[in-house]
Length: 537
Image (cartoon, rainbow, N blue to C red; front, side):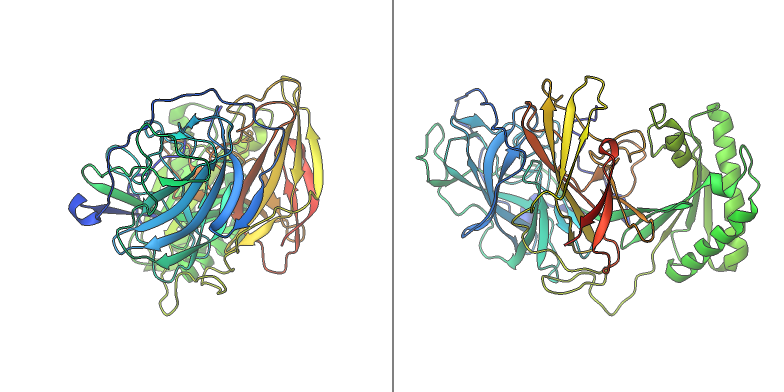
């Protein structure tokens, strides 16, 4: 089972992550003590409903869904806009509980241990290929601090972020629930303090259904930090895997292509592969600092000492070939990681494939930054990264294919209902419902990672395939690969909200978009099998 609190704030990793520290006196964040009415009520059983209800309300972009981990809150979320206020940006939204009784906020909109009752909603710039995480201090996320949701009451909520550039006109808000992604959120210039505009909810009071009130906002304590990360699109071919952002790129070459078994001598086939990589480095890479990094990796077989030595020798062999092709324009750093940084879980039903993916040499370099054009563009424009940001995705559309999986050890049957996929800037959004057909409840931590998945995402065993080129597009990662633990991906942050038989959970994940002319793709849905001719809209 994945760590349920896996989505976390990252430390400063440059160039992929920009971390902004704001002094308390300079950030201008307003608020008061976070208090909540001392009331409680048990959770009701969620309706047997596999997907979210979606509407465009006069007050904003609205979706109904279930939010939270083991006690999901059924609620309507309406997002108004993101406002720029100089030293920060402010996401404005309202949350209306659709439950029949009062419910404590708990961890409904946050997935960070020790930061319960916070709104941890990443903001994705799908054209500029960046993600903005909420501002935090030593206590947790800054912004509205919810208490108890009374039925039918609209709770105005604000969440604070680092400044978003003026040329970004729309973003996508990623909520941790079945409502998922809110595309087409406008980014506008704001006025005032950035705090809530509705009257504050009275401590211990019970607002009338239909009323609009605001949560208290917690004042920052100590230094305030905001994280802006690059998004990395992962693309796989038969010989290589590329993880690329707008700032840097990592090319992972399978050592089964480069070397014979248990050898550090390059094969004849490796010559053409390294010719292509050297040409890409010459075209894209900044010959200044940092140096080109060449890292060797093995699978988990063999002793640690042997794997470390073999991985280093293989990295050195690749480094020598690159230097011979590129001359003295670049500097290099070569390391061997052995089996310590796998990208796939070994020991499962797909053990051989997982081990083959872990045997690799990775070549990482900084991309040369070109001037003369914006890094991103707003609605209706095409940015340098390619693609237009999607308008608000109001409807998922009709199911285009369904498959049933019965491969779970418990005998539980699941059905996936696939919806049309759609483009959002530089990415493709894969959308589906997964329905529990029984018998029994789903485990609260049920995910679909699989043995050959990238570790950390809930749907990273799934992929999208261009049937013409056979290129495989996998999940989009937030920030650089983190060898310390699971990575974060652009997905709901959790897979199972409703667990009862007959209920379902809407899922989605982002992959790099295939070329503009691709109008249908193959969806490799892991345990559900391959589904051809999924339309791309």
